[in-house]
Length: 409
Image 1 (spheres, rainbow, N blue to C red):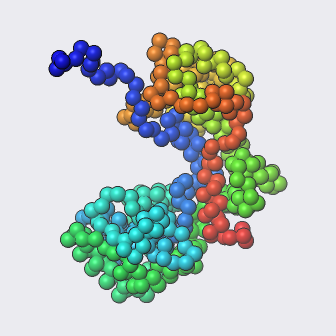
Image 2: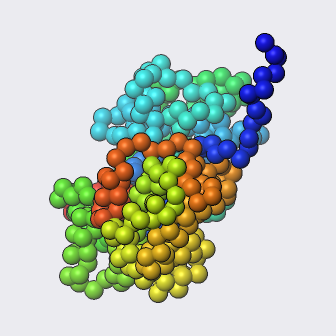
Image 3: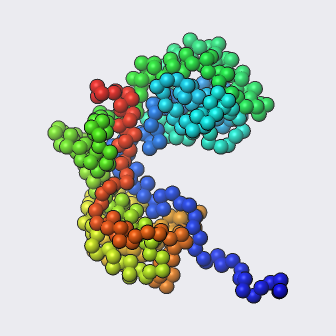
């Protein structure tokens, strides 16, 4: 046997390989731009007001009371503090952990947090909630707590000085010695402090003033909450109900709500179109294009083009490729639409330093990991823009409004 068989070849870098790519068409910046007009502060992962309060409290304690200025391990401090808050939420009846439920259920009182552990265990509060705090103006751009919040939190901290000092010693020792902290050992000491923070009426009032936006944006959150409470699980149905409410009285965000109805159908269809193309490995672009004439891509592309009337969107670089795709759909240039969807995915992948999972080679579609299934069902999914896959932050706004106001509105 030869040691170098002739039938083995060197690796061909041109062969397509699949990378895991979230949002492979770069749709999120588009829908979030629309959504920010209605929900200006909240991120899609900021579901619990306790998470927001916790981030403000941890940052406030870091600035004034807990963190040793000589200790530069900010990430270790945050990791331990996030875990302590999550543990409290898990142990306190009626309070949902913000991100650490799985680890807490698995470990319970035996849970240990290491300052040098980079895994997302119970942590994530800073990652998922701090952006909301900055957009709401509760933290500035260098993450310093504003004066209103500092004053409100100090009324609580001043009543728990001994517990805070004890915690500070434990945290600094854990960080300096790289030793784990067991949240169960601090639960009783910190329980009253956390509860006082979460229930403080002044803090709750600050959240009402800052978190949901201006008066009309807060009304949107109320309508989203009422729609959710009425049992609407479908995003399109929720927005239809919100529109019915907004039509009853003057409301400054009517055009921004209309933008949702122009945006959501088309970007949902583009996502399904990519799925169809991923199932057509080996087909020509022309063969793929022939399947699009019976879809609603033309109608929804035309509606999407109406967003060009909004100056800030017409000049937005993230919207530019989607306006081009909408033009191809509107003019029924199906081959161009199919090829440009693939090219746009390639540019998104390149921007993120990833390898695209679909490309065109001599007019033939080549897919690294093809979708297996009924192609007819994928084509049929393009015959209606529903269901929408994007709710433009309506769900999180409804959740936060319910936590702040409840059924009273």
